[in-house]
Picture 1 (cartoon, helix red, strand yellow):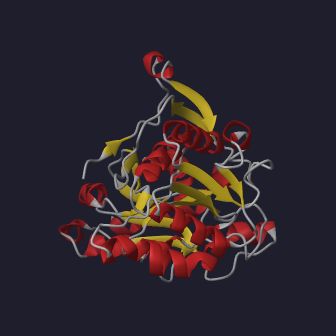
Picture 2 (picture 1 turned 45 degrees about the vertical axis):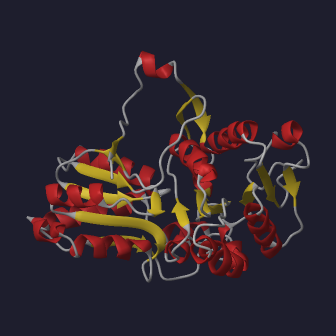
Length: 346
């Protein structure tokens, strides 16, 4: 797989002419708008996505442009949303369904896991399910235990599903366009705290290929593998650690399934030390899969210290804001984990 080197420095004057500042939410909306203009088979469905514009205002304005036929408000039934979307995909449409909180994806599991993920394989490629399930995940908004989980590992476990977790506005736009054009069901996780993050995004339509990890920051001393909200936290931690003489490389898989592990393994060979960071709890978390790939490859022989995971606490997400922050890794926790690993490796 090709590795993407992503510069975090300011854009040049030439690059700036081809980009515009957008929030993460605006970048997703732009991707939806461009694809819906391109292909009339694409339509949206979900709870309150029409006139209201969605629980997080991501679909705001799309109802006015595309109308009720292509921006469909649904009953409050995630099972109905999933069933309608899968059926539409099977008959030649390209639905993009929104599940208001990723926790509610539990109500779609039978249809998504036992039907959508299996159909193309079971029919020898004669049927396909070009479906995207968009859904916000994660903590940090005070939404408590039933609206704040990170359940990406559930879906990454299922052959036939693709799982995407963009960490920046530019990645969100390019990966969503790629997901919409893919002929397989894609679960597209958007972290709630990223919706207001603003950054430069290429104008017009572009595709960021699924299964192409990005080196978000090059470094020599320690590898940090992070995805979703943990990427900006890891980058901030890396900047602080640089002031202490610790050079951190940050790698963002972006797509958990299929996973492009080549740049992760190459980075570990270079640094000899790795910290895997994610918000979900450690038990059954995706960090364990990444750790296993490292230890089962020849990168294992380059390690100067054990693989470390920095993960969420084994508790439901609390409502109390201080406890909520304490339950998931923060920037300070990443700094501490990297410092400790550097001391162990010396």
